[in-house]
Image 1 (spheres, helix red, strand yellow):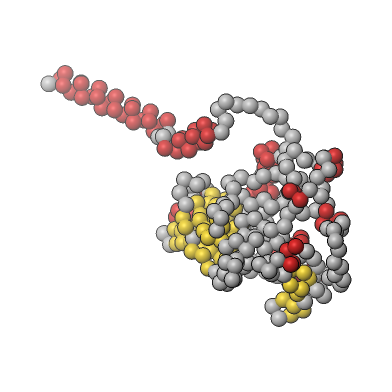
Image 2 (cartoon, rainbow, N blue to C red):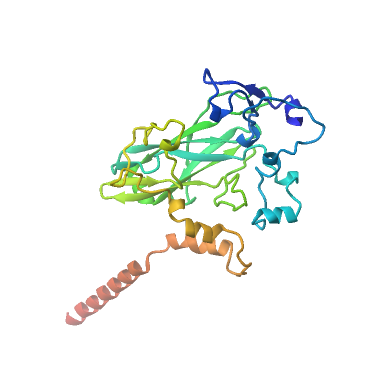
Length: 326
């Protein structure tokens, strides 16, 4: 109610989308729209509106769309701590987020010196504009700024509600050598997507860097997203598997070659991020681990060092022999 009465926050009742009546999946006959909010707060199939003094007790309003701390590992834990109605854990406005749509999951391209346009979208909640999007090919050691395409001008309060599209030109040869690339976005408050996901009971509002793996196929490479979005599971059962007409890396049965790298490595993902681990302490944890990880790249490989040293010793020994024979 407070948001609906706030003159800086637009809200509407929608019965059409793109010039057509709403599809039932989108809330026909009427849907409440609250720009900046998560979809779970935009009530579908509206038939009655009731103004009440207190917040509603609808099951999905109370027992869904929450981000609990990691130690809340079951619904019973939330009940025991009496936090279902605690506003500190309620999801309303979206957080900053971005994703890559091109190259698509399982798309493949020929390796060459040509450039590839990596594309995606980004958005934020609460009317905060997306100010920056950037892509890394080496796990955050360097970032390439993306060009942002906007579809609106800020309102009278400086707020933006639409997503933005972004793009960045990257040599295919560089993509072929990186193994993985990722994107992150920033809003006007300098909020930035975190590097890692954070486990929570409902799995909501996770907005880490969107990472795409790169795999070699001889003179081609193919790209693996964290998970698979199959258009054949959409409303239109005849939707193409490749809506952007990209060439796909497929299995002999016609399915995509991977369900997504996080799906493929789900056991490892659970081992790393799931709750319930003991609080093991390690004096070398934290930045010391990061230093070891990053510093390893700047040091020569041991085998290369050994070869250089052995080469120098052999050259010196030969020189001594040469002088002795003079």
